[in-house]
Image (cartoon, rainbow, N blue to C red; front, side, top):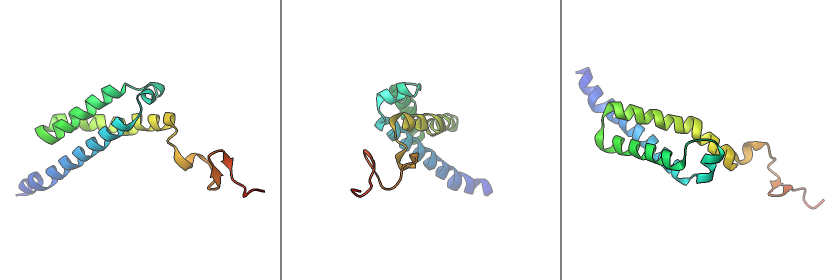
Length: 113
C-alpha cells in the first residue's frame, strides 16, 4: 500500500523535477556564448548541448531511472561548475560585483558636481 503511493505520487514528481532542471540547464547552455566555454576552460558548447539534450530526451521519453540519474549528475555538474565559470568569464556578476547603486556605465554618478 505504501509503495503504491510512492510509485504513483513521489516518483512522478521527482521525474518532473529532473526534467525541469534538465530543460533549464539546456536553455542556459544554449544561451551562453561559444567563446565563453573556451575562456572558462570548460568543455565545448556542443558537448554540453548534446549531454543536456540527451538528458532532456531520456527524462521525457524513456524514464529509465539509471539514465535519469546519470543525466541528473550531468545537470548538477553544469549548474555547480560550468554555469558559474561562464558567468564569471562573461561578466554576468551583475551589481553584486561591489558597485554602488549610483554607478553609471562609465563610473560613479555624482549629480554634476
